[in-house]
Image (spheres, rainbow, N blue to C red):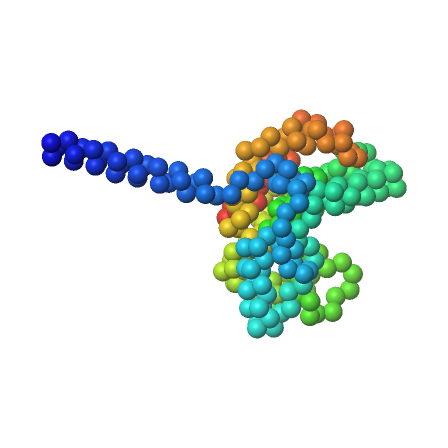
Length: 244
Ligand SMILES: [Zn+2]
């Protein structure tokens, strides 16, 4: 009798132990393909911030800390929906092919040095930001790598970010790694890892290939199978390993 109840208890105990990790996995939010491709309406927080709640709160803390250190974090870009990305893509595509006379395949290669195919931008997630220091006077475009390098106006800000951004959960996505493929080095683009890591995990389980193939924006008809495979492999997945 005693032995039987002992076995029963062990049975229940081991069952509880095996179900516990599964339960925590199921507690992670599920993101639909519509949401991950910027086609859903999501709740965004903060005037001029426009991030998911948790990323917004972390950004506000980082902004305060940066301010104390003498930097005024200026948001250049945060959440961007599919249709905004589509407009950026089509403007560039039409300009390169019609005004500059580039071949479609060359125009696409040039666009994806810095811009994503609509539906695949991390800015669709409400977790990623492009930031600069608002204090220095800067001529021309601000999102230029040289401006974050030695002698550039954002060099001190970049040094501060190198030391501090990760404490707030923000990680550089497109790092300055010679062997990294895909998008070029973007010293201004940070991602709030606690949210964007699970989002990327779920995004890679979707049929990204089929999703892009079904799109009808300008230039999409020139995407070949090998181009799309390389794009997913290099541009979506060859990023800072801390974000995988
Ligand atoms: Zn960006």
